[in-house]
Image (cartoon, rainbow, N blue to C red; front, side, top):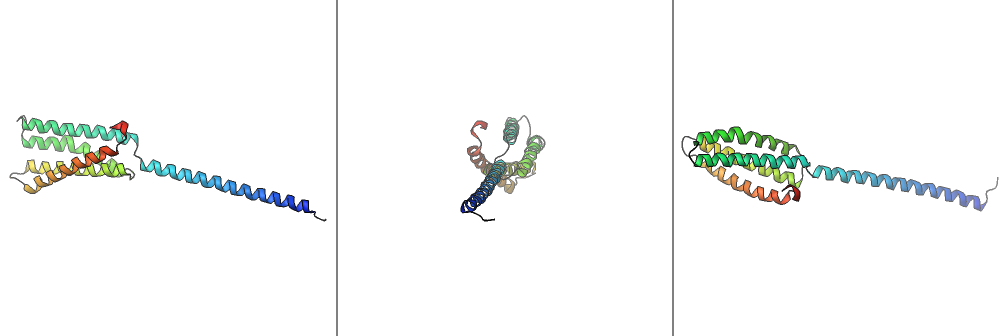
Length: 168
């Protein structure tokens, strides 16, 4: 059988179409994989809406409870030991539980800021409890409270800049 030039040209055209299809299929597969990778990265880098909503709830509750107890102690309605008890019983447990949730969340700029804030505020409150329970002045605990409280205030400002607009 003698092959003509037109047959060779047709064979070449078929092979080129097959090669083109393989390249197109490979390109589409690569695009799908890249899109999935980007979506996975975005999903991991942005905290779930529920975590942000719970953050606001826990923060408001704990800060309000602490501030209320502090004011009551300042008005001599409770003593320092009662204030320490309120912080240990009503403030630190929900704060620490939420802090553990934040620690388990995938890293992102927002989550890292949240972690710093929760750690510094918790350390400040724990030092304050030590100060309140100490039989005599404990300058180291008081200094730790003041330093960590100031750091937590700065962390809160940095965190506020990172929170989504609608959740502030």
